Image 1 (cartoon, rainbow, N blue to C red):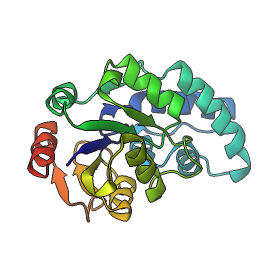
Image 2 (image 1 turned 90 degrees about the horizontal axis):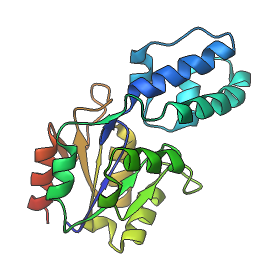
Image 3 (image 1 turned 60 degrees about the vertical axis):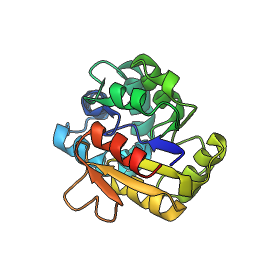
Image 4 (image 1 turned 135 degrees about the horizontal axis):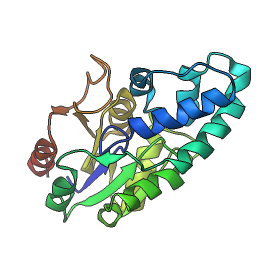
Length: 210
């Protein structure tokens, strides 16, 4: 293994509370009922457009609601968002490998979060959902990440918490490592090469497959 690529939401950082707050502020402006934290928890991972499809039932409202949510979320991006336990220690332990972040969250927000949380220096590449014309689970996202890192997908492990990550890794020919502390629904991580319960296990798998 020469490279490890990480998802952001639900993998490196717990972002649900800031997304939940921003979404309900946006919905209120459109006269829509608030959604539960559980609804946000279950809908994160596919990008902001996907999230809006899960939350706003009226398609005609989605474009405007998306714009407003994005603006509000930018104002509340890292108020409660925090790294999951063991994140920083794992990144330190993986020094020597090439590391990247591949998220479906807009790139500017992805970069701002890793910078604010103090881990940006670990990553050679940070890509978001608008960095390419496609998003995860399209394998082109991981292939491009690998290209920027100077490695092949078969030399790479993608670490994530959703079916989008598992599908991306498998389609691109990379190792799929699914984490259990994120936002996945039951059964969503089936098909992963590894399913792990801690960042210490992520490090073990990366070393074992090196």
